[in-house]
Image (cartoon, rainbow, N blue to C red; front, side):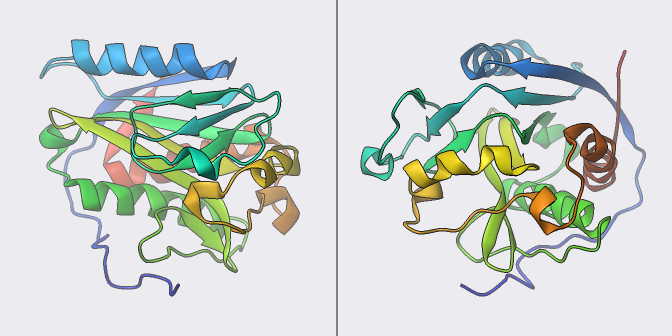
Length: 225
């Protein structure tokens, strides 16, 4: 598949940056965080500040709403959780930085397609910090380096408000379990980690860069309150 060059409109539009809340959850199991995202989205109103959650999950395979079980090849001792995001199956685990932007897209006047493009662009620009060229692929949301997937994207939008988010492979510790699935429903899809491309071997080194790029794309200032 060829990289998408024209599908996304990503010009920065001058506007006032909104304040948002940053929550670094550290290491946390998947299911409680997922349920907390659901509760936050259900309970928020028009005055609720948007939030950005960062987390490194314990090992888990997640299968999206339309996910096909046959793409889970050999889960072994890693649990499989059926979730309410789009997309097929992916893996979360140590060595992977997961970011959950919990946004009121309607208030931000961002369409779903543009939102996906902005999240992908934030990862692309983060990789550029270490002179790593990355791209999108048509029909396959996420970010790729030389055809190998380095970041996956799966979202859910409810009443104009989004949750779930992106998973960014930082160290090669997170790579082996991908061999137990067809990542994102694609048999044989290669995956890669930032550290294997000459980037940092520490998630903490990546966090501030990714936060800055997400803030730029989403016109938000995420701060710990």
